Length: 251
Length: 82
Image 1 (spheres, rainbow over the protein chains, first blue to last red):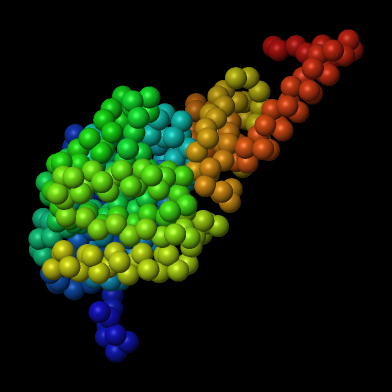
Image 2: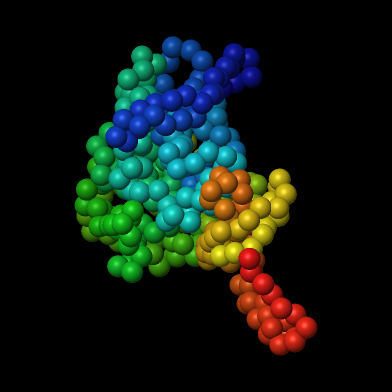
């Protein structure tokens, strides 16, 4: 843990990696300065885009001693202001799940290849990123820990499935291959409290290593300090739970 | 669709309206009725966005129909689309 007499340095910049299908994609990579070795986190951005709050989250992880890497999941779709890009991607039905998984595993492989890596990597996302993080923990075999924050559409009905999202992520619950931390607001409408109950019941039935924390006064997106949905006490506690979970599983 | 929208760089022809009931970017609720008036041929920046509460969206829809009804009933107005 950083204390005030210590030197702290960080490099945070946009780099390019080869993602799904070998496509070059932009990635925001924040790392502590020094030889490490450091644990890593792949940060999956939410539907509103590869935006400023995700820059802040990525740098926060680096401040806490993680190699934090956040790929631009919309890099192939368009470039412009993050909201304009996200609106265009939303109009096209979102990013395809298989493409997201390809980009996420590429980001993990990149950080694990570095001499500053301690060989451990987690995956984390909020909102649609939470859904993708859970999916990654089931479909990919590279992660040592999974953090899902209020993942909407982890449970999808048949009428919600599309060509880009052809399978409901909860269908893969039995394939989850890393410990899972889930943070949810009870007042959230996607996922609802009932859906989180179902998600938890399925994890329990499958004998998975998980811990869920539910916040009675919070709804969706309660980490988003830039929006009225921010809930201060839940966010502070949520971040503490995250860093505790990461320290236990990425050492 | 056909029409004109005024974005950050001025007026541009509209080609599509994307309507969703989803998390808004800016409006202070978890869900909003979001309308993006766009012209994809001009890039993602060619966008006029509104995010409305469900009640406002319904009121707007009713007001749109009322304005159209009044305008189309007026014999002095002839709308021509070139």
